[in-house]
Length: 203
Ligand SMILES: Cc1cc2nc3c(=O)[nH]c(=O)nc-3n(C[C@H](O)[C@H](O)[C@H](O)COP(=O)(O)O)c2cc1C
Image (cartoon, rainbow, N blue to C red; front, side):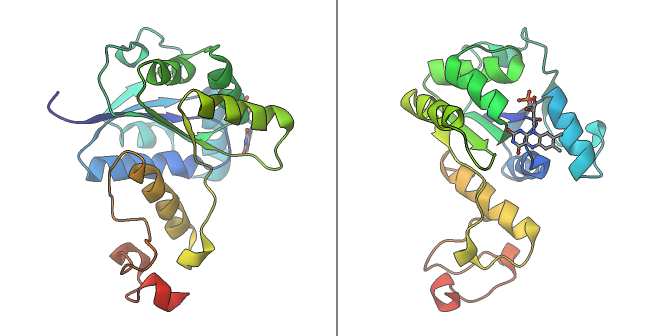
């Protein structure tokens, strides 16, 4: 495998921009991205952003239809670093937690778990029901990582894009990748934040 590869699922939770920005960061890191977008995510895209489907698919190295369960990424033989679902709806979480995939996002996540690769779910809902919590526990017990997109206020974000970039920077950390967007306690802030002081000085 010449280029490292990652699967990116965008499901219909609020926060479509997390998926978009993740694709941009992966391109900057020269990681080959394989994108799947659920039907519900097309609704959040329209409600939350000015993006059209073609704008988003153009950011990915490869785009796979959500019902294409014959895609290469549906097989464990597809070598990659793992998969991020950004954002992850409670429906997609439930599907992954129960291993009952109905489409390519669920299948690719299932494959990621069975091959013991890194699966990160940016699960988004509030407040949470017991079913949501139990599903998060089940995914964690199977080796997946629940990483809700919760802003870190110690990072003193100046705008939404800094909040998004920090959360995604911490997700990429889970794969050993550094896009330079995560603010690190006690270290000089990355240029993306516009700060020159260290985080301790800002605190
Ligand atoms: C504007 C909008 C925002 C939504 N936000 C959330 C959310 O934050 N979390 C969630 O679990 N579902 C949310 N939903 C509902 C999901 O889209 C819905 O459960 C859908 O069936 C999920 O399908 P998917 O998992 O295949 O993407 C939202 C729906 C819309 C239209």
